[in-house]
Image (tube, rainbow, N blue to C red; front, side, top):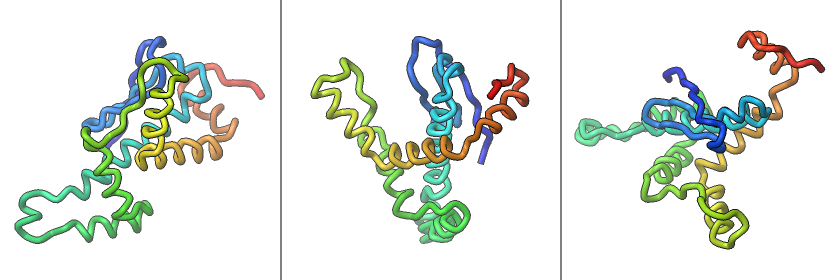
Length: 159
């Protein structure tokens, strides 16, 4: 897998996003001051992992001609990362623009907004990325944060 590059939106842009084609993660610069920013980064990084698993199992025209259904690659991915063929196929389905439920825009609290946010959050690509985000938050200790701050050359938080 390739390295992931992180870029920042202006502070007035909320949240994060990822460019699936090249792996760039985009975060709101306001998240630099929020511990939630690391969770958003973990969420978006998982989205890139999902896309990489899809890419690794894409069946090309030559594969179709030779009868290669990528079963060996699926088995290797499951052994190395624990992702099943069914999970990857569901992600592949949901990543298609005509299937993907985008996050809602508009006024929060309206029935339409609530309906769209529920559809967005129910997608397996989102469920999986949110689970990883929560795992990251559970695993990332205050000492890890201090180490990351030292590595970045910024002021280290005090306990």
